[in-house]
Image (cartoon, rainbow, N blue to C red; front, side, top):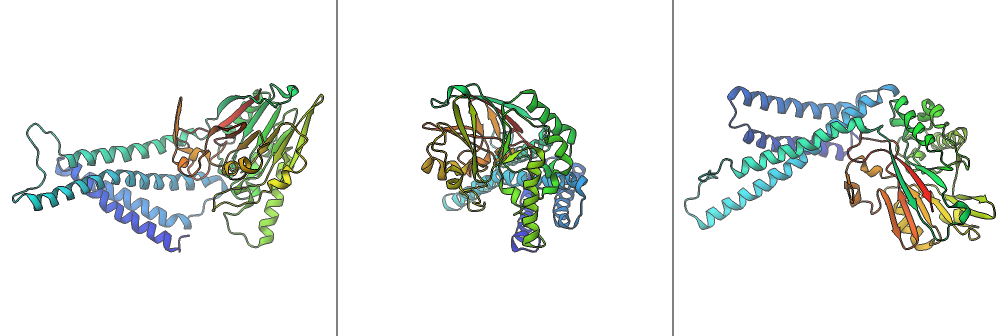
Length: 416
């Protein structure tokens, strides 16, 4: 990565961005005293140069397993500073375009146009106003990312009742816990993680379903958390599927055999936890004379950057005899791309994957996250005809070691 052209283009862009934002820093600090101005200017460049230097050195800094939080936190702070500056620069660009148009108009239509001046009663120029606005918006973004570090273990219970006309009467009132995206390789607080598991067990679920991404890359990331997640149990069992991160596709392996062995070990981890891993297959549940089916497939995504290991045809085969079907499929893009088109008898699909981007806004009747511009279904419940999809916001986190607005989720589903 660090030797790729993209890496050096990114560094170059960061340097140019720093010089561009610095022009706005000079504008808003122009009225300050000389000593204050010097502190602001030097402080800006120390922070900016430090961020670029850390980014350059980060690939060479080796962190042991227990110190991985330091690496991810450093990277998140650098990324936060970068995106804050990008957002602020949008306002500066608006002002530059405005002033450019004003300058051209002045040259074309006025013979004696001077620079922007204060009109009578005006207390601040538009340039200073937009510069301050950009700084405040960018600073607000950076501040929210720092605040979000403290939210990564604040597990929220999302309760939802789902009604289906074809659900057999014996299964009415069935309580299902849905979790997804544990990403154990990102955890650094075992006690906090355990509290989330305790929340799940206090619900006394009939069935627990996990929809993939148990680890970030390697099976051994679960070693410290086996005695936490093996506490998950339910009368009807715990069932799981694989997500895109579980295959080890995002790291370099010594050989194909080593990568394959890691996946086989991860399958064993599921078994040792007492979870039934569904690999393009289905199981059935019976209560009295009623039966329903649970299907689970490997990762299948309609997005080009993610793999299609799943085989829905194989998992679905033989399920025609069941009046009600639940599908576990990690990536929600699978719903529109294949499930709704070819498997209309799947009543409920459960997915995860998006994490809600770990950043967004959720208010009663309104939710927003940048991830919605990539995934049409990204968090919560979606319905098309008689079919339903629920996208879990994720139990864990990856990349950014925090959450802003989109908290880690434990979904409590009651079938009706």
